[in-house]
Image (cartoon, rainbow, N blue to C red; front, side, top):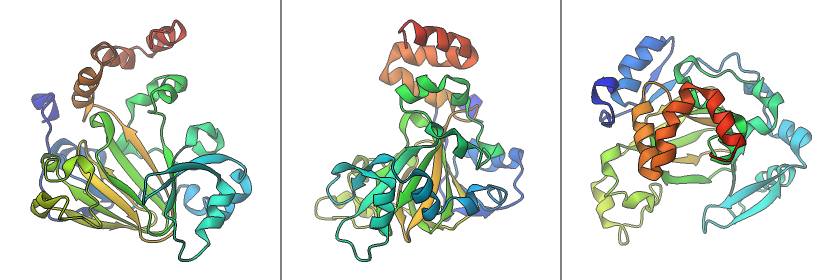
Length: 286
């Protein structure tokens, strides 16, 4: 279906997000990826070391001195904080601040890459490219999210028509989904879906949302261009990844072309011939 439609976005309206186990790759493609439907997969993280190893105490003891950006949910201010200081902050009850440590890139610490397995459903052509190139353009994934209870990643769709997955190690998250065509009533993500200001954003009353709670050990698939907002119902640890493959490649290529025609036309070429990307990076053409 996606090949026939090429750059046409395919999505399916839903009333709830299904939970699946023992899902084959072909079933995933036919029932979800090719028709643009989110799905929770409940049994692919069971053998991840991260599921038991990645605790707040683990990150504090092993990576506590590392500094990372934290974001204040209330005013979007950003600051640097050590991992240890942030975890200490998480233990303070009823804090007036809402700080979130998100987008901590795993590949900077290769030993962490051994603690999880890329799910078979989400093959990622970006992984063919040099890590230096992915880091330069901020497509180096996966990323770790350590969040205080009540913090939220604002309403958004993932960049460049990438698909995404989010796996939950601990805690619980609520996710609100909106189909791609609702961008006008969502004010391009300016509205807070968990606490909408209807005086400022009156069209939001026309939005149709689907809510789901993600539990520890579950992974959720987020199709291209679906709007979503994620809130931590408890102190939580998760990881997520953007990806491009045969299911969304034409959409991603078109998105890159719209943003930068030269790089957009180069992307299919360097994904097919990764050695070319290394050469072009070395001479400064990428």
